[in-house]
Length: 343
Length: 293
Image (tube, each protein chain N blue to C red):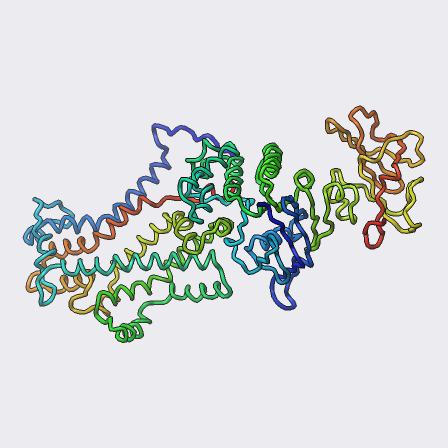
């Protein structure tokens, strides 16, 4: 049932002539059957436009969208066999929950009995069986989210699209639904594309992540690749919290840029900086932030300000002079000019 | 959203509150007085009208003026009362109201949820129709009706009222639908619904308040219209407003005020009834729950 998705050479411009705005440039992504692709980036990076182009709600200026090998550009959304979960849920306000879930099946003229069976299955899967007679206005935010998921699941489509589906939920519910989406994807195995600006959602849900900025895919890779081998400083600082330390200029002792590059940016993640009394790289503690399991320590050094993560038992105080150490294996080097990864 | 607890209503309203009520009561009396005068006059006979005060209650409920106004009063040469005119108006207003409302709903649906290149400009042009004085179109309209072979017919009047009301009904629906989230239409498109299915299943069920507003608005306009009625109607197609005018202007020697008043109330009754019946359906907030909330 799972289909592949090819995003091939997609360009998108809004407007005509000199005043046109380029929102997507040469986007090429192959999504294997059953894969869960994340499109992540700040607002305005083109990720939602790309999703709408896949859905058929918008058309590309150039390029092809192929589902299961077939080019679907120009094909209306209803013929693409794609289900989409919207940020606002977009539940039909005058229809009951059951009719919301069964709407697409009704449009495809599925017999009533079969439709009812499918609705009941989906409702059981999402634990919303007791809500089937209600209207969307009588549901809580989390329940609406479940119904929106149910509406997509009931269709058993070739492709799932998610447009920031969790961003209207409160933090606790978001974590819960995130796990739920992961579970449902593992159960159904349907190829999915998921748009978010939340890096935690991206890392936890995605089998692969496309980090986007300014209409261009900055890096496409597994969560592990994105985290451990960021392609440029943008990806490096977008993924990870607190963000990666980027140090320009004077390099701390013991760390040498590859190929003898003179001008290089050093990137180090906070969890890879350790406090070490006898280290030659010295600095003064300016802020100590306990978070419970970890404590973040901000240290001012000659090379720049460094945030590091340490355990909760740390005894450092603001004003302390400390030594910092970084294992060479954990150093990320970027070209000082292009900010692209070196080696 | 935090709401402050509302204080319990006091048993004795404040002076300010009393003043407000007094002003409201006065205004209500002012606006209801003409209707009251018409009503009491319609139940008096000619002699009593002359002898009693305008606002005095009738000595007895004499319905004869109502019967006369309805069935036997003279409106020029014919003496069949308002009845034939009344039914002409019904035959004209009902289809014209329904067609112009449905047509406006479709226009509004397209102009707000299926925008196309130039749709905003088209809507701007349509708005001219809202502000255009209808006297301007009388001559060309009469020409067109002639070409269509609809001169002096009820069908012709229906057409005229549909066209005249279309700009307004489109404006109502377009602005109402502008508040419907575009994602709702997109979701339905993804679910496989087409243009008409989205309209019937998703959009129209959300439209009860604006449909009611439009129905009342259009019915009041079309039923009360005199201009088109007097210009475009023929012998057998005159609406009740024209009939009322003819009835009031056809008097032999004595002016039958009681008949005139009864006729005027009969002519105005349907709009009042429509308002009372449909006004209840002025419901709001049906879209609540469509978006986050």
